Each structure stands twice: as C-alpha cells, then as structure tokens.
Amino acid sequence: MQIALAKRKVKLLFFFAVIVLFSSVSLITINAAFIFTDNIYTGVIIGNIPVGGLSVDEARNKIIATFQDQISKSTINVSYENETWSIAPKDIELNINADDLVMQAHNVGRTGNIINILKERYLAVNGGYTVPLTQNYNHDKLYALLTNISKYIDRNPQNASLVYNNKTIHVTPEIWGQQVDLPTSLTDITNKLSSGIPVNSKLIVHQKPPSIVSQDFADIDNLIAEYTTQFNPNDEKRYQNIAIAAKNINNTLVHPGEIFSFNQSVGPRLPEYGYKEAPVLVDGKLLLDWGGGVCQVSTTLYNTALLADMDIEERTSHFKPPSYVPLGQDAAVADNLLDFKFKNSSPCNIYITSEVFNNRITVSIFGKNFPNPAEIQIESTSKTLGYNTLIKQDNSLSLGKEIVESVGQKGFAVTTYRVKMMNGQEISRENLSSDEFKPEDRIIRIGTKSQSQQSTK
Image (cartoon, rainbow, N blue to C red; front, side):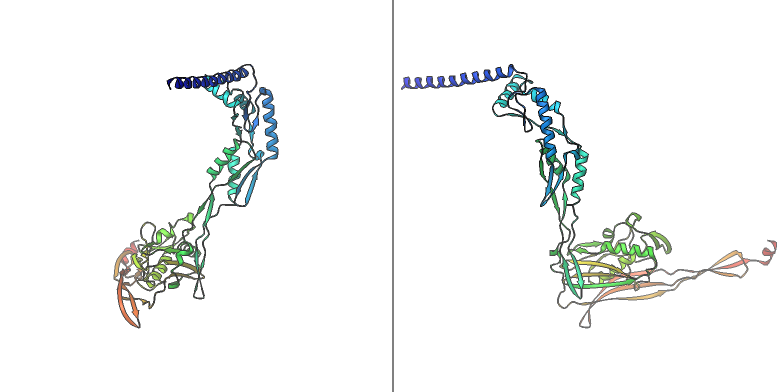
C-alpha cells in the first residue's frame, strides 16, 4: 500500500511539473513577444476601440477617426418616462486627448514594478486590457442643458383643495410634484461618457408630496362657521395688505389639537413680500407702517374661530377699538410682538378659506358636521369711561382766549362672552376677554397774556 501511495505522489508531482513547465514556456513566449516590439501590446483597447499591435501614430489616427465618426452619428440621449431629449456632442464641446490616451495604451505592460508589468501583459493577451476612453467636455454647458431639460419635468406639488358651491363641498385632488436630481443625473451621464458614445441615460427624478391630500378632507362635510368684515376699497395700500394676508391664510388645513398661528401663516409684513405702508394705530397715534390693515384679517379670523367653537390660545385687543367689528371682538397682531392663535379643539381636521371681494373679507372654517350642534352667539357687556378735561395756561394767547387742543374721546370697558344655545336655551357662557379702551383727555388751552404784556410787545 505504501508503494502505491508513493507512485501516486510521483504522478501528481509529474503532473504539476508539466503544468509549471508549460506555464513558464507560455509566459516566456508572451514576454518575448512583448520585448521585441515597440507597438502597443496585443489585446489593449481604448474605450471600445482595439489598438493592440498598432504603432503609436497608427493608434492615434485610428482613435481620432473612430471618435469623430462616432460623434458625427451619435448623440447623448437623456430620457424620463416617454420623453427623450438629445444632446449633440458639439453642444458640450466633447473631445478627446488622443496623445494622452495613446501613451496610456503604449505604457500597458511597460511601466511599474515587475509584478504590475507581468499582470498587465497577462491580462492584455488573455482577455484584453481596456484603457478608459476619457473624454473632455464643457461641464457648465452640459449642466445648463440638463437644467433646461429639467424645466419640462420639474413641477411644484399642488395641494388638494376644497370648493364650496351651492352648500356642497367638492374636493380637488392633489398633484404630486417632481424634481430632477441634477447632480446624480449628471454623474450617470459622465460615467457613461467614459465608455464612449452614444450615451443613453435615464434622468433621476424625485417625487415631492403635497402637504394636503384628498384624504385630509375625509371627515370635512360642512361649513361650520363664517364671518365677514368690510373695509374701504379706495384705500389701495390697505386693500393690498389685506389681500396678501388673506391669501396667506387661505386653504389652510389644521389638524385636531394643532395650534394655528396667524403670524407664522402670514409671515413678516415687509415690502419684499408686497406689503405697503398704510395707517396703523401705535400707542393711540395714527402712523404709517408696513402691513397696515392686516389686523382686519386676524380679527375676521378670530370671529370665525369663535363661531366655530375653537379654543383661543392668544389674542390681544387694539389700543383703540376698530370700527369694523363690535366692541371687544378685535384681535391685534404685530410682527414678533402680538400674535393671534387658536387650537383646533374638534376631533377632526378643519379647513380655513379666506376671500377678498370688493369691500369685504370673508373667512370660513369647514369641518365635521356633528348631530345637534349648539348655536354659538358672541355677546358683550360694556360701560363708558368718561374723559377728563384738562386746562392748560398759555401765555402766548390773549387773556381768556380758549383753544381746544384735543376734543377728548370716551373710553370703554367691555367683557365679551361666547354663549352656547340649544333649543333656545342657554347651556353655557364662556368669558372670553375683558378689555379696557382708555379715554382720551379733552385738553383746552386758555390764554393768560395780559393787556400790558400785549402793549409792551
């Protein structure tokens, strides 16, 4: 048995020796073939162009001719769904550095350490060694062309919306937005250009969801509150401010328990957003300020929220009561100072719309129509606060002469309630606010200049 095992080992050693011998002979033969030529080694390819066995000049001429023939017949095609856009190579100044590519091909199996040289020679003969067809192009022009193509694809998402007509609610479905991923799409084209042309690349497009979808209106089936105030449409600047603010709160969805902030929804009242200077009351004085009139929008919304039985989180009265709502039913706002906020206290989504038409602004809140809802009324009690009359002596006026410097205005103290009625009976009364509008003193100046002082002068 030992003799048989020894014979088997001898046969295996002989077999491996034969393999090594033939491999060595093959390797020596291959390397001998490489050693005795200055041409590019057999099996070397530039891109998809075989150049093995050619001289440097022959290879240069071949890749230039082949490349020019390819770009004259081929294009860079980018597509999305069923649309395809073609970019001509000349439009991006596509070209190659023939000298550099040929030298890379010529150096295959000739440079580096002995292991790298043998490896490259082996690969060239036994399967081919490819030098990437590096192409030069104007990156900015390619990016600009892709940007222009993206204009036909990009779109902003459109929210689902609610339309109320003839006491019927209609929902307009949402539209998803989409945007071309330019950096990723450009990288894909660049990678494919390294293998030559034509290039076929699919644009990478990301979908952009809308913030309001049809499902958000699943439980909204009725108009639950609406309030209208009037203004002077001839005051163009104030009209514009009201229209901008009203547009910013229009089509707003508020989830259950969510707090709506007027300032957050409307944004800062600045000229770059279209707001104009219009009269506003500041510390009892009428001044021009950006966004004058916006308080009428917040006040109209406030009254709608009251009638919709929403929880009021933040509300401030004006320094002086405005004329477009009953006393105690106003809501003042100011950038970074005063906000109006309410919470959606219902178990379902609510939807706010705001419309400016002629001399009116109407704010509506839509929601779920629950059985036997209570009727909501806004009531108030108030008392008049008399003003004081102040006498000021003035030695610039003739003795006894009177001039009314300020006519004076009465003030008011008002308490506002939200009352719920059911079948004609009051079932609850909520104290909403207690506001005080201070009176303005009546000021009279009386002259103290004597006759002798007048004669001397």
